[in-house]
Each structure stands twice: as C-alpha cells, then as structure tokens.
Image (cartoon, rainbow, N blue to C red):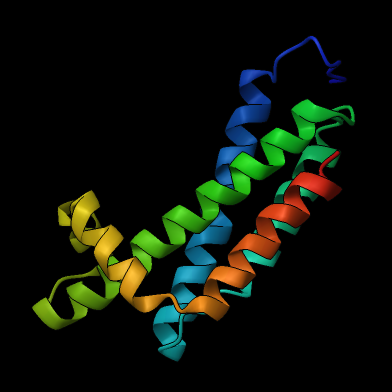
Length: 137
C-alpha cells in the first residue's frame, strides 16, 4: 500500500490511524485519571505512535506523511484532554467517564483543559506536535 505525494490515504489506512490515535488517547486518559496528573508527556508517545503506524502502513515520506502524523497527534491530544476533563467531572457527578464525555460541551471542555494544563504541559504538547511533523517526513 505505497502512497505517493499526489495520492491520498486509503480508507483502510485512515481507519487504522484513527484507531491508533483513539487507542493512545484512551491509554493517556486512563493513566491521567489513575494518577491524578495531566501526564502530558504522553503526547510524545502519541506522536511516536502516529509515526510508527504511518511507517507500518508504508506511507511514503514527504509532506503528506508529516501532515498526517501531525494531525493524528493533534487528534490524540484533543481526545485525551476531552476524556480527562470528562472523567474528572464525571467522577464528581457520579457518572462513568464515557457517559460524561457525551454530555461535556466543547466550551466547557476547553475551559477545563486550559485550567488543567500548565505551561509545562503545553511544552510537552508542542514538542510532540513538532516531533510528529519532523519525524513524520
């Protein structure tokens, strides 16, 4: 399944990459909810996961792979932060994390994520996005 610069990712490749991004975000959220910390260093794991998956799918090096690795990492970061916020709020309301994640609105999730993440957390996330873009080439 070789992909050249002018081609698009196949639906199978997109599905596998979405599955990998969702899986690493779930592991990150679980780790964060268990430890009570944001665990933003997991963003680097998400970037490495996206890079490995794209290489296993034999996506050719270039801007398509770099952009896709960056987008997959950004998706993992967004999902993990959403699920962490939902888990924290759900715990206080007596809801399971998956129930509260469906009820959490984007504005409230953004507010909670911006309050929970400190400059060090943003540095981990920025480093992960940079790693995904550079190593994804």
